[in-house]
Amino acid sequence: MVFVRYGTFAGGIDLPDEKKATLGSAIRPCRTPTRLLVPLAGEGVPPALSCVVPGQRVQPGDRIAERGQGQGVNVYAPLAGRVAGLTMASVIGAAGFLRVPAIELTDLSAVPSLQPGEEVFDHRTASAQGLRELLEESDVLTHRRWPRPLRWWIRQGREHGCGTLIVNAMENQPRVTADHRLLAELGPQVIAGASILARASGVKAAMLAVEGRRTGDYRPLVAPAREAGIQLMALSHKYPIGIDAILVKVLGRREVPLGSNPMRVGFLVIDAATALAAWYELSCRRRLGGRVVTVAGEGQGDPGNFFVPFGTPCLELIDSPGALAIHGGPMVGSRCPADAVVSAATDALLAFGPGESVHSTPCIRCGWCTDNCPARLNVSALNDHYELGALDQARSAGVIACVECGICTYVCPARLPLSQRAKRLKYALSRPRRAGAGGVRS
Image 1 (spheres, rainbow, N blue to C red):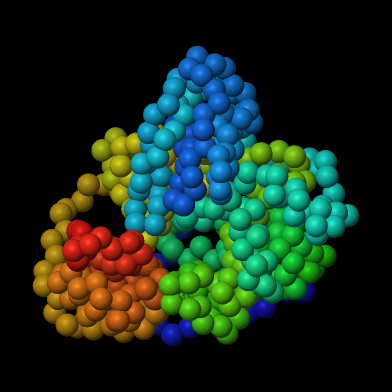
Image 2 (cartoon, one colour):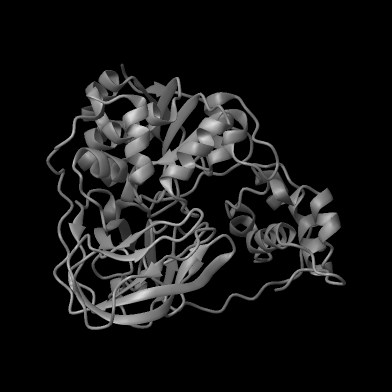
């Protein structure tokens, strides 16, 4: 088995790579934070209930909050420390950051390094039903932009009759290299985690999608992938091929319905970090209390890829006071509020200097946004609907199909925040309409 070179898609752009500062940077533990604000909830994940008291000492992996009804998860201490009490923190959500309850831990132990770990359970000899039962008992979250309990993700895939699993390691935004380092250093473990997820979800085929320019670094994956029956796919670096819906269109020749997800057309899409967390949980009986995060940018004096505990304040990872901190990649990221913390959805933190103020001008009808839109939307018309608060017209114009890639903002000569406006329109359309309410809030 070798990496299969595969096709591309209409629209999109070629972006500068800008990964040199961290591409070869081995994963290392971040410096010990002054405190952790461990989130108890997230977008669509109901809050867990604290089961510790102020002043209590906890060890890594100790349960500090218990899930209630529904799709919540138990929460565990990422590091040893002392419980300071309940507080609030900001985590990334569908329309930006949202504030959620959190448990503050102080007097922390050092951050451990991310080692391969010792297998104490052979997942290869377990039945698919046995793997599902173990994952049902776990509290792993998917490491996507909107984390969900992994057990829910598997249930949904089975209910939709999904036949193909795609591990999306495309990572084709500039500067971000966290998944690349996971594959380069812990690739066989990622493959094993993907095999666990494929068998537990009952799919018939599994793929690992990577950028074609990096395949030379992934040669050690060929033998483990062959043994696990996972096909290796090398794709074009054209942005935004890493968006789930576009990846499914390229690899599966299927169109994801508007406002839906790939499960509706039989595809389960997951990331490399979730596959690794599943392997640790089942094979090593070890709970990862954090994830690998790329920390880079002109305002970062010590760029690299770091293993960061959940609940670490984002601004503590930035070593330049006053730098502008962006959560996520440069195309889809959001500016970090003061109380933003690392969660399962954090793959990158980018630091930039203050720079000059950007002032938008009126749309000049150049059409660049529409020409490059991978969803083939009339973006300038959507911008008109946003400015007029015309939600119904935005729905008719197909704003729900927006993949939130940020290309329209990137190419706009008028410097209009087109992607952010489309995202706000989508979010407004997803919320229940109040009687007499209309428009969209800026």
